[in-house]
Structure formats: C-alpha cells, structure tokens
Length: 312
Image 1 (cartoon, rainbow, N blue to C red):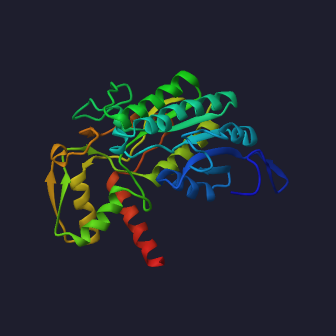
Image 2: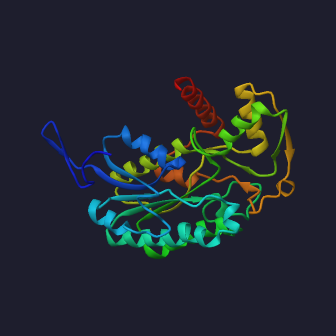
Image 3: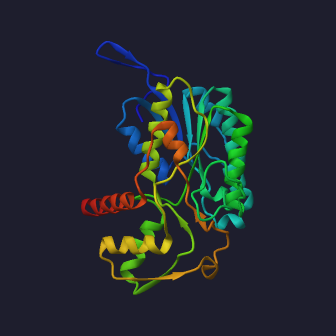
C-alpha cells in the first residue's frame, strides 16, 4: 500500500487523475491475496487490503474509522468464516462473522455512500439438481455455514441498495488451504485415496474471481447505470471431487489411485450440496464477463505452484 490515504490524487503528465478508492478485507485468504496481486499491477486504483487484525469481523472495532479516514468508493467484502464443519459447533462465531458483521459493513457502506461487493456461496441454494442453477432459483441453505452466508446476503439486501452479491463455489488458489493443494500434498505419499464423487460443481480459481471483480468495477464506472444485484460467479463447466483429483494427478504425473466414495460414507458434520453447478448467464449478459472453464484454470494453478516451487 502506498503511504497515502485513499482520497489522494496523482498527477500524470499534468493531467489530474482521480483514482478509484477501494477497501477490501481478507488479506491472508485466497481471494484477498489474489485481489492484492491484481491491485498491485493496476494503476487505476488506490486500494487498501485489510487483514483480520486490521478489521476484526468478530468485534468490528475501528471499522467506522477506516471508512471515515479513507472514504472508499467500493468495499470488497471477501473475508468470511469458511470452516464449514467447525461451524456446526461454533455457531455464534460463524454467524457473527458471516451475518452480523456483514450487516454492519452494509450500514457503513450506506452511511459513506460506498458500493458494497460481497462474496457469497453456492451453499445458499442446496435445492436444485441436474441443471445449472440460476439466481432466481429457491434458496434453502442447510447447515450453519450455509445459513450464515445467506443471512449475510439478506442483511445487505435490507440495508443498502448499492451492492453486488457474487455467489461462487469450490474456491482454490496456488497458496493457502484448499482442495487442490491438499491433493498435491497427499497424492505422492498414498497408493490410493477415497474421494467424494456425488458432489458436482465448478472449482473456481481465486485469481479469476479477483480479476473479474476488478473488471466489474471498471465496467460499472463506465456504464450509463449500475446493475446492482445478485450474480453467480464461477468458473465454467462441471466436475466432481473425485474426477477433479484424477485430473490433478494426471496432469502432475502422480501415481495414486482415486476411488469414488459418497458424501454419506465420508460423513462430514456439515451438509454439502450435491449439485453446485451455477449458471453465469446473467453475469455474461450484464457485464460481458466469461470465466475460463474449470480445467483451464486448474492447469494454470498447477503451473503457478510449480513455478513457485522452482523459485524456492
């Protein structure tokens, strides 16, 4: 972050340019770190990323001072409580972070006329099967995490109309704790792994999410009017966890057999959607944004990880 407040302006060749002022949370998380990488190489923004210590969603201490000091045009709310199974017991913390704090951020965005962008989840649907899910389909969240994310959405809708809610799924990145990295760690040391095959969705690459969030902001700034609302926001295509694992192993030359198992046999505490294939048509028609297919982005991620390993 530059040593200046978000309200600063920069002069280029005697032309005054007003930068887009952005606050975003989640530094240390997959999407937050991907946003940080994007903002570093984009001179249209003056962006400040916030770690969980700088903006503690459990208390919201100092949140208003951040808005008062920086007067952001946008707040990107990408931090969340994502320990899906732990949430079944840690109900209060999960609801405080994903729902209550989200409502308080919406109040601050309204007070400071800041557009709010919120990353939500495929878990809010949990009711449609065998066809891509559209934004107007019923929402029947099951489990504490799913209910907390949907309640976060509802807090925003009732509080502040200048918002975008983006529902994504199966997020992974070259860094952090995620399924792709876990399989790369386990595969070389195992003869076989039992992986769930009855959950279908689209693995979504955090750098793709970050890149397209910034694209949404640019296109909104240049449009005649804003298109606020709720959008699906995932990579294209579909797969299941077992086939995703096979894809990773085949690409990396890992000799580990993948055996299909079921969600019931796996026995996780929190319910998982069996079908999480989201239809991005609304996003594509509104913003002319098309995510890569999931397999293309997984290959990209694997290549990035290999590059990082070479450097270290």
